[in-house]
Image (cartoon, rainbow, N blue to C red):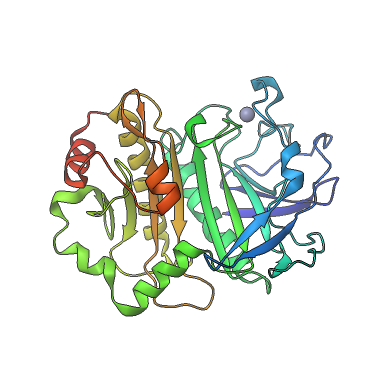
Length: 338
Ligand SMILES: [Zn+2]
C-alpha cells in the first residue's frame, strides 16, 4: 500500500492511498471552509460525555449526484483516486475545538479527529460491490488510521463506522465511512472492555456457534450473536483475540476484508434491496490489551418493507426488543441466494 498526505486549501489533511496507480496532479480545491468543533458536557446521571457540535447544522444535506462532494474533483481534487481519507468539514471532534463554556456540569474541549473515508471514486456501490483488491486496500487504510490516530496524545478511542441508507440518516450516498477519534472511551466500548477484563467472552462463544454462523474465512468468523439486539445483526471477528486490526497479519486483513464484503452482500440479498445499517468497529481502547476486536453490523430492516425503529423501550429505557430470533436470522443469512 502507498500513501501520500496533502493539506487542503482550508488546512484539512487529505490522505490518498493506492495499490497500483499513484494520483496524478491535483486540480482546484473547490470545497473548502471548515467548521469549528464544539465541546463536551458531562451527563451526571448517565456518567457519560455528550458532544455538542453546533456548526454541524450547516452541513451538506442530500445534494444532487452531480454535486456529490465525494466524487473526484470534490473534496478530493484529483481526477481519479483509489481510497481517500480527509478530515470532516463539519467535525464533531477536531484538533482545535472551541473553548468550552463554564457550566454547573463539567465541560471539556471536543478534541480529537473526525475523518471521512471514501471507499471508491465511483458514486454508486457498497462494501459488497467493491473489487476484492479495493476492499483489501480499504482494510489496510483502516489499519493505518488506527495506528496514526491512536498515536495522538489527546486520543483515547478510535472508532471507524459506516452509516448506510436513509433509514439511519445518511445524507450522502457515495460509498464512504467515517472515523471518530475521541478524547475519552465512549460508553459501549468501555462496557465491552470491562467484560473482556473479566472473561474471554467471545472465545467462549466459538464452542456453540454452529447454529449462529453466517460465513467464515481462515481465522475469522461472521455470525449472528445469540444475544443480538437488532434483527439480522451480524458480527465479524477473528477467532483469536486481537485488540484491533492493527495486529492483523496481511492474510488476516485480506480475510477480514473478504468477510465484510460477503456479509454486506448477504444482508443486501436477504430482502433483495440494499440493507440500511450501522457498521461499528469495536477495538480496544488505547493502552488496553485484553479486548477482542469485532465489527458489529446493526441492520434496520426486519422485513422487506418494515423498518426496525428504536423507540420507547430502546431509547427511553435502553432495553432492546427484537422480532427475529438470532438462530433464525443466521439460518436466513446463511442460506440466502446471492
Ligand atoms: Zn459521489
